[in-house]
Image 1 (spheres, one colour):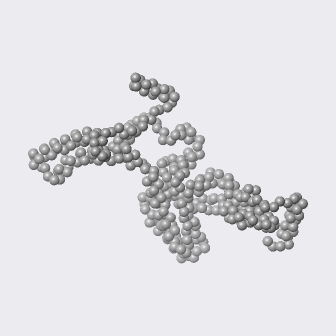
Image 2 (tube, one colour; image 1 turned 30 degrees about the vertical axis):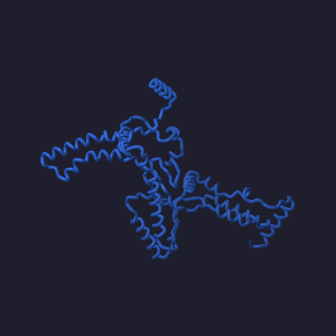
Image 3 (cartoon, one colour; image 1 turned 90 degrees about the vertical axis):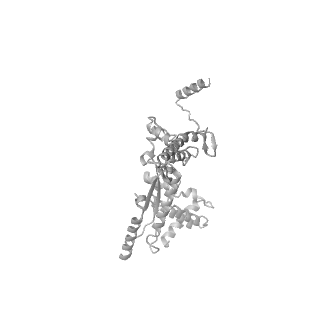
Length: 343
């Protein structure tokens, strides 16, 4: 009856397009500690084989200390394979995981790693960029790699003396040559990005927010409006330089992230100490928000410029109100002041 209900449930789930995922419950019986009875069963034939080999070699006169180690090698190897656990899933032995991989390669079924269906990703912008996710201050790509982006400041080679310029270029050459070959390739990018005056304009807003003089407040308002226009100007851009390093995710994602973090720390230290204190270089790893802004500016540059604008209607609240006549008189006074004085 139980078997019949199992097949009925399985057929019903198949008709609904669902599958039943079995729970990985450890049903093994343990003899001592992590040593299972099934381990004894699997190891017994190899122990018997070792005893037979020792007996034969003893009768032939070839039994020595080195030969004894060779004869007990098969059961030792079997025990190691049975005892070694999966690095991430401690309740699964390594040999079982290897067996599952063999069955997976021979299987002709199509498995989906994500909850999203494959057809849903066709029109996703991530497939165009090759990016799956942004987390842990890293970019996770569709080819199973994690990427860190290091933003590096620049130095003006044109303004240097000839000796300083040659010394700087030599230091950069030594930096590249000293980098471990196993960590290559390194991607070095230069990208135009919108001028971001938002933090500076916020400071101006805070400094002038409590100003009681309306003329000074109007001057601050016009100054912020002018700065917003500069930010939206396509010709007003700044150059950003990035060092991009990556690491394969492999079996353990956390280990890959830790390894990539160590690589980024070493690179930042080498960059900062590359040319000494006279021409200092600053370097920092982009966090999740900065990575999102970088990708966003690469996709939609114009909108990225607009997003830096300060909205005066939301950020500046005047402590007084006035009528139209008073406001018109103040405007005329302001225009007269601009004509007579150097501001």
